[in-house]
Image (cartoon, rainbow, N blue to C red; front, top):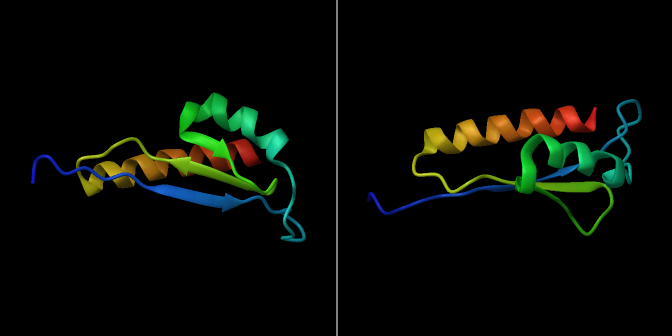
Length: 79
């Protein structure tokens, strides 16, 4: 079991905070998100979508910590 690893990718949609409509805002959000988390964030095909990927993790606790860190920082970039 020591050799097993896990990683997670998540995709988020960018929404207008008032209307909850999709917003094509990747060009504004991505630079700030990259500054916050580096290459663990990237754009997607749609301009209203952004993707994160955890580092390679050895435990589920590591996955949880990575996802929490990435989610908080990318959400901050989108504000």
